[in-house]
View (spheres, each protein chain N blue to C red):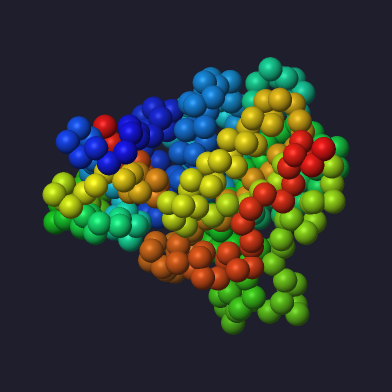
Length: 70
Length: 245
C-alpha cells in the first residue's frame, strides 16, 4: 500500500456525477473539481498526483466507480 | 494494492442520482462475489424501486418481484435453485413496511436467503415520503412539518424486532465513509458465506445517502448519516448464530 512509484490513481471522467464524496474523503486533499464537463453535464474531478499517496479512500467512497488504482 | 470495481458492474453506467448509495452497495456485492468466485452463481431479486435500476447495470441474473415482496420471491427462487446464491436487494420501505409480513415470516422460518436492505430513511423512488425508518422531525413530502413520533411512531430498528428470531445473521453498517464501507463489505461477505453454507436467513442493513429526496448536497447527506442516523441506528452485528453456539 502506498507504493507511490509503481501505483497510481486513474480516473474515468465519463462516469463521474460530481457528488464530491471523494473530495470530502481524501485525507491528502489531492482531489479537486475540474473545469471539464462530461457528456452527462457534470463537472468531473481531477487527482493531483503530487499530493496523492494512493490510499484508495476515493475508490471506496465513489458510487460511480470513477477511480481505479493500479 | 490494486483496486478496481468488478466488470460485473462497470460494463455500463447506472441511472442513479449523483451521490446515491445504491452504487456503493452494488459495488460491495460485486466485489464480494468476485472474491468468492461466485459472480455467475448469484441470483438477485429486486424490488419495484430505485434498486431495480440495477437490472440494466449489473450482470447478475435478476428477477423483479412484486412491490415489497423480493424476500418472498427470493425464498421461492432458492427452493427451485438450491445450488445458487439468492439475494433479495431491497429498500427499507419494502423490507420494513410494504413487505414486513414477508420479512417476518422468512425470519420466522429461517429460510436460507440473503436480504440486503438499503436504509435511506424514506421512500426514494416515489418521491421521498415518510418511511418507518424516518427519523423524528424529519421533513419528507408526506410530513412537511416533520415526522411526529406520536402519530407515526418511532423509527423501526430491525435489531429490536429480529434478534428474537432464530436467524443466521443480522448486521447493520453505514455507507457514509470509507471506514463504514470496509465494515459493510465485511458484513456483506459474511452474510453470503453463511448463505452459501446453508445457515439460514441473513439480513444486512446498509445506511445509505439519498441526497435527491433529502434535498441536500451529497456530502451533506453522508454527514447526516453520521450525525443523525448512526446515533439512532447503531452499527454492528446483532445476530451471528454460529458464533453464539
